[in-house]
Length: 199
Image (tube, rainbow, N blue to C red; front, side, top):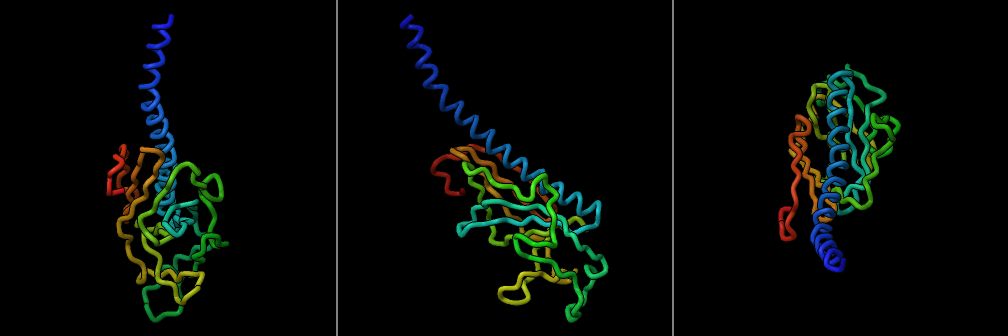
């Protein structure tokens, strides 16, 4: 009996790290998959309904994501969107703050709260990505003034986003999600070495 107990104890000692690693990877993958599904839904709905959507992050100073929202615009106007004149005073004015009455969530909740045990790291300081009805993901236009809380959307002042990425991390498990102008390009899961300088 003592021999059997010793064998079980030794086996458990070797198995526990593998189990912990597996559980960590599953936890991270689930959080990343929810994010990817939300982004894909927003792009699809923007195309299907011809309504501006957005992804907006609640970031801390180090670009860690505390929460994010995926929302549809509540005051869409196609005619004002199409204004291509730089000098024109018309345009589609939308709130640019994290909490804005111009937007409503397309998720099951008002915002997605990131699991406190998971680090979600965003590669850009640009807190908003717009899903344009043409199918492209675009950067927000420059704010009209310091402290402004709105963006004026016109076709001429929008540009496709540069590729960005979001890293989901827990323990030694990592999922890296890339976003470009066409949506979610790839999702890469891997176990990171402690000395991986790219993370």
